[in-house]
Length: 479
Image 1 (cartoon, rainbow, N blue to C red):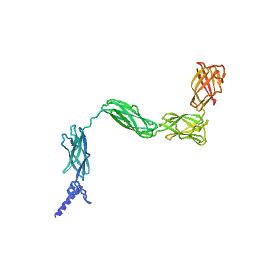
Image 2: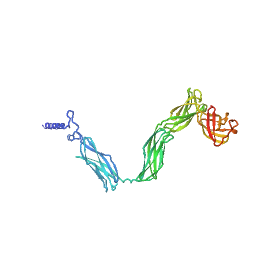
Image 3: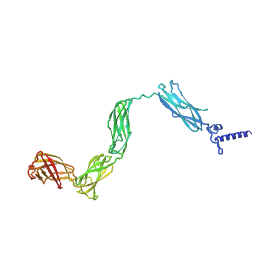
Image 4: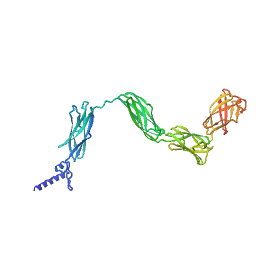
């Protein structure tokens, strides 16, 4: 009967548990560890909680430190946990400790956090302290100890300066330049002269060059001063660099670092003018329209038959962006290092050729040139040395060299001296030559038409030169 009564009581209790959702019928009991019923029935370990912290903490005198405390449910514990924080010490003036919350409600299998503040004054006793944080929930109690160190206060700030760059990082391409503004700012009314230096890493032959517009700045108390950082990326290697800028004033020194990125630049060459100085010598006037500094390292000259001269170890000109430079192209007997493919040739009149220029970046530029015959002379200066002698400075502005074969000198009345067998000078393209012209008694080979005359002051004369190609160039000179 007693057993039967216990079983009846147990069945009533189990039915009540099932109605409360604490019992699953069919496969067994739901784990009840950590619950009140689990504890009563002895079906699992008792619910509990734990405390942990990110201790220790260091607090200078006159400041406040904070420690975070975590409360974690153990074995499905849930309920209210209250807290206290105390300092056990014999110090005269210990720090003041306080919890941010007096209690928290912990849910099953969850964690909560609160903080403990450690407040000091300028009079708080220096040294180490143990702060005890205790948590209680009914009959459960746990505590942790947090070490705290009260240290002397930091020294008061002193006048100083600092540097900053705007922008803080730079980017440009080969052959270009970029700038930044470097500002020096006063701290606590510091004033004085600040010397600036700059260095780039890595440094080398093809590294960008960096310099400052001003290397010494006068810093007013409480104010600022600035200079410009200039980066020249002409002929620089593509990549990433670091610019170091240091400011020094007395015993104070500060350094900042500015990142620099160099991207691939563009190459573009334009042929503005060309001329042929001989059958084996041509001159190209090239302008760099690209953003990169361009160095020419090889060239190829091809005629219409496909014959070709090449010079692959050529130290050609280097052109900065927008710079105009002259490139001399030699072939045949004038080019010792050239390699011939096909039949030998020279620059013949009224013929076309393709000149290929190769840069240090291995880019190729093709230019078509034609040996058109164009003679042109320009009078740059004239001077009389006597009544029968005048000197003219003539420049060859044509596309071919000029040979002077004869000349004629006329006065205003139409009288004329002629020297038809004149051994005049040979003037290469773009060259300047002194040409000597004589008349009268100074010119035994001259033929006179009309009345004899001399070069008289205040009078003008016309001098006509005839070239070996039978072109005529007339110039008026005044004594």
